[in-house]
Image: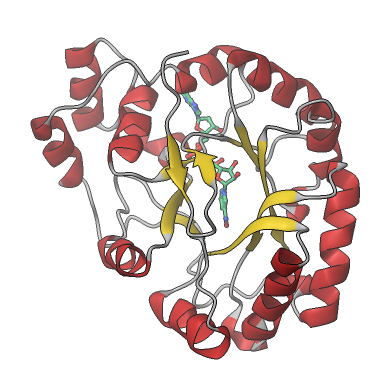
Length: 272
Ligand code: NAD
């Protein structure tokens, strides 16, 4: 593998820029898929308590403490004490005393618990149980509230981000505050792969559509966590460090942004 890039978190640690996402990876297949990915050269895994596969991830990583591991606190566990309890449960399933990155999965503004939850995340970091803490699906206003209430800025915000939904204003806010942007559903859940602009760029570079999109994320300095359960695609999605998109390619993909390009739930109204 050529030069796997890392990005620096404000917590003073580095994280691999490309990781394996395991949402919808069936629990009984998770260990073998994650093991395959590690052998292929993946250095990071993104899971969540709600994915139901933390045990499978933990099993695959048992001899690989150097692999950068992210998990997320589920909405039902928001609140100070319940966050501390949920963390212990995740750490047990993942078989790690220390988790690299712990995220609040969704803000769920209706619950009014995300600031209290953030205080528990800070406690976990101060106690050395997590190396870095962050959020997912938060707006600029919600992050501003966390900073104002606690003085602690999230290291990262993991958000829906792909060529058809580019989140420019939130990315600008992250940049101003030294927060990394992490892209979920980076391939638009597979839908963006058949976009003719992406296909044309793929042809030009003799690469696949998935590789072009992952490369676009990398060159934008996002952390990117494409998901696949297919070995050949896991290999393909990591073979992205030996070519570059040029300015014209980046501009053409930039023009694919659509105001209504969101695929997943809107974080302002999601209250599952
Ligand atoms: P994705 O954009 O990574 O797309 C995955 C799908 O694309 C696969 O199921 C497969 O159908 C297809 N695919 C992948 N590689 C391919 C290839 N090389 N060729 C052809 N098709 C390919 O979608 P995702 O799984 O929604 O997102 C990735 C990860 O982001 C998740 O696994 C999860 O870890 C994370 N995520 C987080 C949140 C959140 O709320 N924080 C929400 C959704 C996803």
